[in-house]
Length: 198
Image (cartoon, rainbow, N blue to C red):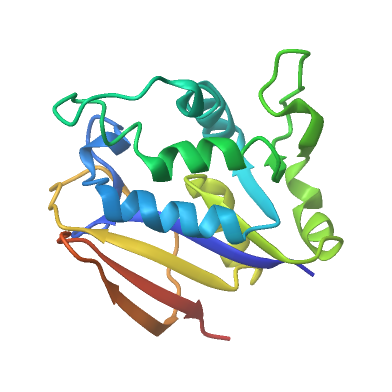
């Protein structure tokens, strides 16, 4: 059975994205990048919803191949060592995409190690794999898993920004137990690790 870890950033007032439906309104700093690298490098499988898969597939493949940039280039964080490592890891980690409608095509990113599974089969798919399974983004997908009791840990990066509105991170009530608090050097963000209460 997979050990399922949700890894997301959330605003201080509990939003997954701002009122313009843009996740880039959240403070995704170098600590966020380092935390995501740690998660994906320890994962055996990445689980994504369709929207996150399509967004990530348009973003991550090219990051590792970009030329080096100067320290004053506005793209310096996007092209830092952590993000280049994340880009490379997507090339070989097993990927599960939860979708009832997506069909992979010849030019789909990571096609040779990506499997699309219908929503109703997610529990069976997770039961059939071993190791750590991490999900990034994919709010609707992992909230469904949380409701079914299939999430083992939530690693929430609490961004030091109040958005004042947007899309809430959670779709339903949940009782959680705090397991760890991690502060990062040179960051106002913190990472909280929770486990769901039975």
